[in-house]
Length: 266
View 1 (spheres, rainbow, N blue to C red):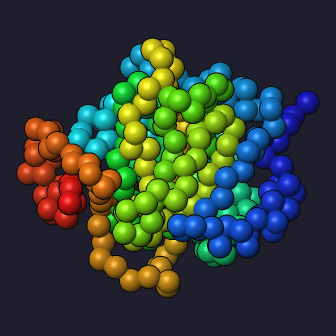
View 2 (view 1 turned 90 degrees about the vertical axis):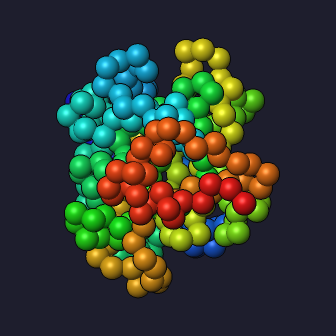
């Protein structure tokens, strides 16, 4: 018997129930929804997640983004996870996001630019950052991030929490554990500083796994800012060590302008 991957009626109810708390959340609009998928669907998705030693991953090795793996080629993603991503780009899920966030006219990204499957190895981290705000090819503004965690067992002592920081990047306001089947939705703008900056302390063989999807609109009426790529920011007392890879990227278009704008410490 066919089972829908997402319950559209349930999504409609959730979006109406959580829309006010989403908008009022600090330090910027966001929400966490636990047990988002039906248990059987979640287990199938988790079981299909590729192991870190498969040859399909791109590995980040930079000062602020280290030992993070990514698959953004849709056809390199296992079928069970591809089907789920298709649902996350469907009209029913887009309607859920629009009702939840109050942002109308959302456009999904079937090409998974910067998104797809993410996996961080022991010792890895993702420094605090705000995301690129404009899709140069599509001429669209980035508005929402959606993360679905696929970590069946997670110990808080392993770190890896998604941290949401205040506008001045002085205080961590939210510390969200990446437990399995937890969906996180948040608005992305010029002060939505986030990351998992504490190096993972999980044991060998354990990784931090997620699906990352981004959504856009044609224009951004609530905020005007110059176009930029991802901007990293050190935490108080922290300083990034620039690597040769960072310098090489900084000398190669289109990274030269981006590197000059990145803040690597105070």
